[in-house]
Image (tube, rainbow, N blue to C red; front, side, top):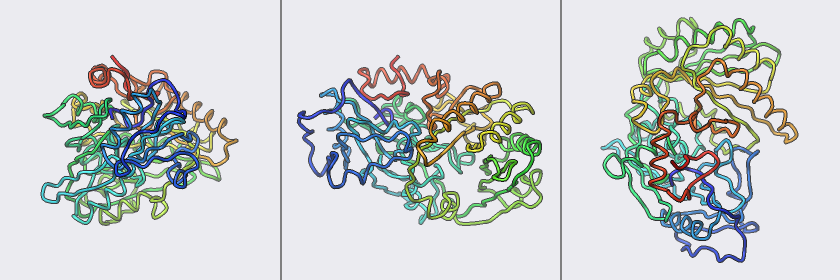
Length: 456
């Protein structure tokens, strides 16, 4: 599974093609009208949801292999699904979906400080498995996100600056090739494939864990402030956050205040000392809100409480940028003006640097390392389908306004079908090697979607 969500071959699924011969112990086959079919239908982005003619709920790697081989042999289009959080619905298909959510076993080796997880495990399930051992897993803050796409695309989270991206903590991966055969990849066995799986494009994963009992969580809020004040604060934040001690992971959330003006929230967590954190935050606020809590509690805190553990599905659109040079007054003002005018968008700036930058840009498939100051995620979510055209137009206007002030790079985990040069935006100088590995591993381009790594 070179990419976490794929479409393959030429035609849509149609009866009377015989169904795959797969044992019930390996997969449960569901078609529209089956009792459990709707149970597994919901996806994060309601705007891109599709109804497949066949959903294979795989229970084993053999089940995945049988399905991949069947789809390839019968020229059936298919998609691969884990958590279903693809912003552009690359885990959706009107034909066949090979669904890995039942491959979700998690095994913790406390002595070795490692965890082995199935391709369908959620981040929340992994967190719950490791925290009784006072161990931490470097991954994202949304508990319902699936491990496969998250890790394969990089995997930014609240421990990224102290411990690296999720893909930086990947030790090995077991996956399925285009013929349905199982392969193992690590630094010694299939090393090129292992390199590509760390930011370039699934299977059973083994990850490093970190001893961690407690963290300091913090936030600073500014509510309904003027655009000029918001510009000043963001300039302070971007000068500080990427250069802060690696123990501190921090973001900046920007939205329009309901009564006018701008709302800002600087928040994050630290694995360092209280005195260090207070000293570092002082230029932004003399009285930040700081709390010490177990690592397990911090997961719940950043998820937004119990509601954050429930699977959410609604129409949305996301875009992203990487910032490699500090934005001046003009750029930050343009951002604030767009947020003020659009009213319905949110912006999240995630600080890079720290352990992310300690890894060479060509050491893994993920290229946005040293020199990347922060990422910007632009987002909008709504409930009324009639609002979709305007919401999409607002997002495109905001994105267009920011072109003079950003690098042109984008985060593959925030996939965006509007991107013209998406290959270079996602993978930069690593694109050529990714294409070469793709051609060697999957010369028939069986594993593909609209923005998967192309053949060389």
